[in-house]
Length: 171
Ligand SMILES: CC(C)(COP(=O)(O)OP(=O)(O)OC[C@H]1O[C@@H](n2cnc3c(N)ncnc32)[C@H](O)[C@@H]1OP(=O)(O)O)[C@@H](O)C(=O)NCCC(=O)NCCS
Image (cartoon, rainbow, N blue to C red):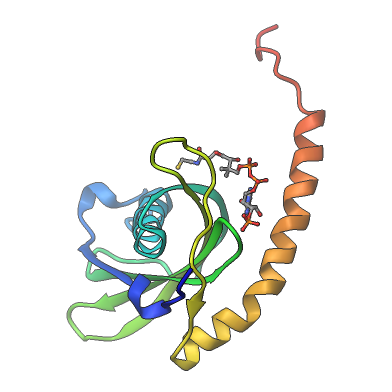
């Protein structure tokens, strides 16, 4: 399967921060931002595999700075690395003060998606990716370490789920 350039998987999205998007601190609600992140990341994953995808894990979301109603919020995502059927997507969130033009990295996130066959729903192989920019190269080179950490966490997570009860809280 031919590899694709990482740039071919890039997606962009910019929004205003409306009052209904805010929390009780009058900054962008974290859940709203996470929804934007999952949305854009799924587009990058689809641009790579051109098939159905599911979110396998939200590996990390780091909220670095609050996003104010006077800011715009821009998200940029791209696939940094692939396994057999899985794709690691990096998402960078930049806030821009619309009065001054000052730009700040407000959040970063890594998510993993799995490609599925449109008809059978089974997992399918995805193309590899070729980094070009320094940022892409750095993220691509460091990805195997993150993949190993995810594999370990997934095993722990399965064990942990085995301990949990499924009783109704009122029983
Ligand atoms: C994600 C899912 C398809 C994996 O299915 P599975 O049969 O457990 O898959 P496997 O163990 O064969 O793993 C398939 C790939 O996913 C990766 N993967 C699976 N779970 C993962 C996790 N929690 N985190 C990161 N990667 C994961 C595996 O490493 C593997 O990668 P590779 O093919 O590149 O080697 C399945 O668990 C699922 O459907 N989960 C629910 C997804 C969902 O509802 N998402 C929210 C809405 S889109």
